[in-house]
Image (tube, rainbow, N blue to C red):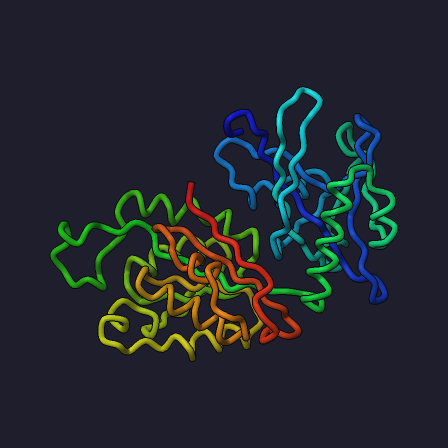
Length: 311
């Protein structure tokens, strides 16, 4: 909670059934309403973490976050304002079969509804508007999406305190904590690949994530500080491979390299450069920006950009 505002997070969970979109709607017996799964952030929890946790607790589904949707704001009966951040979340058949929904006092039913029926059935106008936004983005994406997660390495030991080669400069204790802390937030998007500058401070930043998701880190000298210093960056080729893979990827690099990476993502996806792309490259240590692209047509433009800072 911030200044009396209640912060919450949730997701528009969707799947295709016989080629048609269905979205997940829950019934809450306490309010006798139909709404979308969501819930309040717990202390020390980020909004993406909360969205994944709340959907799992309310519906039994393990989800992967996709594109961000506009936050909803409304005033509760007690006069306090509630702000809910939502993401779209495609749910595969494996996740549907694995889910074990149990009716309880908070949520006693969960229904997969056709999009048109859900718009009529939902109890709140802000939920209906959210579904309309989701439908527009889904149509623009032509289905599934994936993300390129551009991550700045965590807080490193100061240059003045390090006597060895700069590429060997390690994380500071605060940076080691940041590297561990961002794992659960990054996992909300289920990254399938991890790419990093070979500098120790970058490789150490993604090491906890690599262990958590059991993935190897691909070291790319072409996005290193040394390559930037020497004018030998290989950003276009590296970004092109990641876009062509159509798999959500974490790409960890250095502050001076980040603008080149975001600029290349704009060029590769056919997106005009603008302030949102430039702002996405301005990251503090352990912060990351996610560029969302269409899996069917990744060159059709950036669908959304979001930035997350470490707690």
